[in-house]
Image (cartoon, rainbow, N blue to C red; front, top):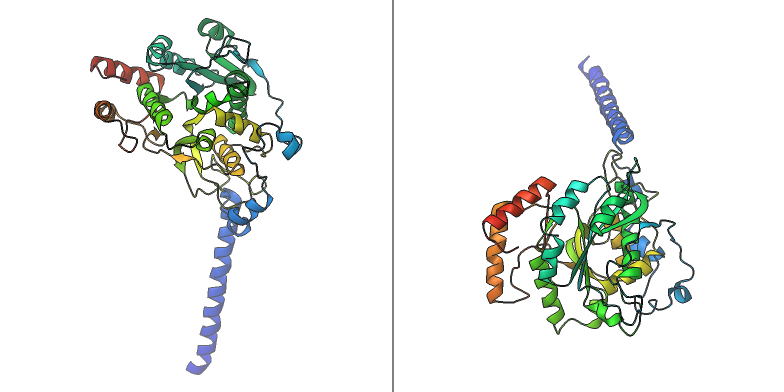
Length: 383
């Protein structure tokens, strides 16, 4: 009797095991349907091998003068236009031989309904009169449209610092705004003559979101040190881009994720190293190169990844400066005081390899920005 039970128990155990495996597979399958948990892992292509094999390779030196002669007709031409171009914000002269452009251009990415954020910046670190005393700065807010078609013409006429494109301010359209900013720089704030294009090697553009505090003293100090550095080559200045660099980042495959990317849109297993788009710096020479290359690199929803793909196509490596461009964390007031103490150290020792005060600090609503600014003024901290 005992001998007869053993085969039966063994069969029951096997059936139980197979049943559990089947249930587990069904659970994984339905979780994948509900949340997009990735069967993609098995379907993704290798970025190192497959993307490199199909990507377009752009030589930033050879293609600069006549890209179509080398790369053919543009493959990514946007129909987006400027509603407010503000073409004279950088230079008043129409003569490309005599135009003088600002040393530092700051383009603040905003949305049409973020008036309070723009006002906070205008009354704090981005105050026009204050910037004039600091150096040769220009600042503009770059907006899209909104679903209610609210006009910003009155604001543009009053302050003269608005650039607007005819695309809705929507997160998944951020790359459109980025391309249009590059187009605007190329058309209105970069040298139009070969005789003066070398000036753009030492003229810069800072891209920043409207919820950041920017330490313009730290920014000016940093670019001045760059311009004085004799070890930086002409090619390095041409292709200069820096900020908080993120490496070995994977696409988000969960359908419920804000950063979800399907296999159709991006079938590769990782992204190239990218600079966080919340705040980053590049030479205006490089901004023109990026605009040229953007016509040949397929558009991607997220601007930071799109800029990375453009950089990768030109074999440009972003320079990590994660301590200067704090895009992932926000500093408290006490941190700001510490930043000022570091600045005092700088005044005594100008060293590129010494720790420096941060240029960008993330996480400032309009109210918080004004509060911090007033605190800085009360404490008599240079900012």
